[in-house]
Length: 468
Image (cartoon, rainbow, N blue to C red; front, side, top):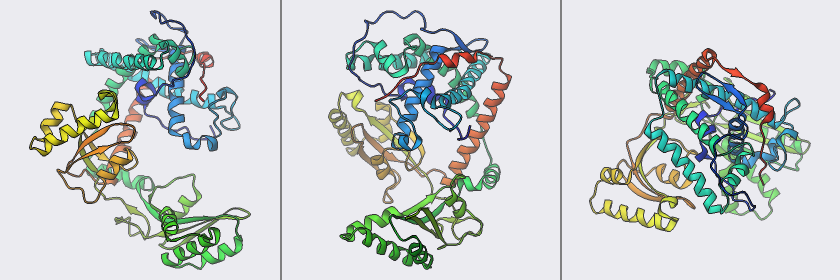
């Protein structure tokens, strides 16, 4: 395919709880006991498991919904219209968006089957915890239907297509639990020495190194003049003053507050390499020096200008601009008071405040965690957690052992305790990448060695959904 298919986390494709159900108006039939799938034709089959057209339809639409949610700000740029049939939308010159999602499934679902077969071979059967998990997921589905005041089949069809029913979702969840058990077993065995991590880092340095810069886009301008003006900048101050000059010309009433916000947006810290970006290739060039200027004419009257800035943290092999992120990542203990559990956000926050008061009155956080079934999170990364929690956790004034109460808007209230810092950022990302590569290689070998029957015609029978 012309565009690189993005890697996906296998379990994310299968878990019903990851995808919200839409409450649309409409009528449906009364609920009846489901004893067979709507389209039981096998698409993939191994000794102990099969994936039917109905199951593949569920996987397809579940992943499609997840993809839309994750890329909702860029759907227009991607050329994806959620209100139209995927089979009639071009992904590139050779494939439709339907083809794209089928390619993803053709890679990921065999991996699920191979892991599940390996679990069977290792003697794994669904545990009571597995069964309880499946029932809890189905109960969430029932609750969604009740809240929407619609039959459960109506909700399923709306979100996952007319070939999917309750039995289909149960079979998908069961397959997930089998595959997850063996996947977890594989991942738990991985251990890498510092030497191995250093070696992997060096082999994939661009993946883990960081770069700082300042950039500004000028629209409806004299391109030659802009090139000349910014090419003359030799210091960061020169570049900032030139941005101010052009910003004031573009916005005649720009005040100090506007200019401060504008400049904040111009700075980029910790940028990563991207092999499809000309700018990234320029930035990560071994010859790059601090305060070098990058100028790109986007069109006849638009120019993008950027300046390389000195690196932060630890310079990579003496580079003036590339650096290795040695910042320790943060660890926390947490107790979550969710609106779902307590009925609404207000009552959840009230309960959290009650527990917080008990902590302030002398009860240990460990005891409260045990009572309220709290948990721990390690090596937290900016951008991967709610903004409200991120601000609290990454506050430079935060100290080990400190406890605080944080409410996430339209969600839950969290009682948080700072733990000792985790490993340096570069080591965390290197370790994560090495584990993923090792895991993917092992799974690929499993797929290769698993006897699997395939009915490729089954993909054409997948029914898709549309979204408003």
